[in-house]
Length: 209
Image 1 (cartoon, rainbow, N blue to C red):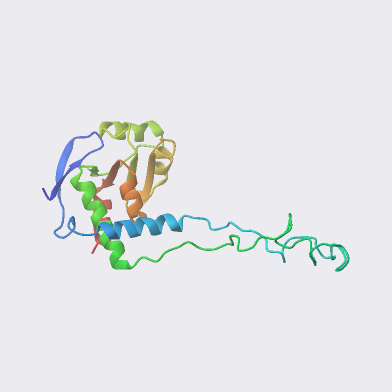
Image 2 (image 1 turned 60 degrees about the horizontal axis):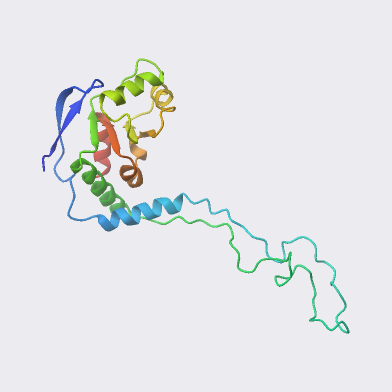
């Protein structure tokens, strides 16, 4: 496998070559790390706000429904008992966090493996700069069209987000803009094409050290 990537400009022309530092490409291990990291990420996205009321939280039921004896029925002290219709819930869901902890080294290995796979598959496009004259959507779409990724799901990673880039890409379907230090394993795998600027890729590789 070649350890170099072509650097393109916004018109799709090759303007240079990027040498991938030694040790960045990892294809021998890391599958389990990727799996664990994605599971943890998706678990962390769960709201965990499902909540049912216990018999102590359901309104009403303060009075004894009927007298203790002589009714030929099982004794009952409250109409909010879980065995009654309209009563409380036993062992129902309560607000909780689904977050899972991922060790730093496992996360780094997962990032390295995910990035390596996308590079090998040829799905990482490297730009010298993502420059826009203004915040018009057509200008951002023109760049994507020049790079032959206009009809794909694309993640654009920049070292810093500017107002023009955010506005210009906000209305393009299936395109998201991410600051490099927030890119995660799930997003590396989710999108069909990854669009990094040279500075963004440099910053991302520093996260792998």
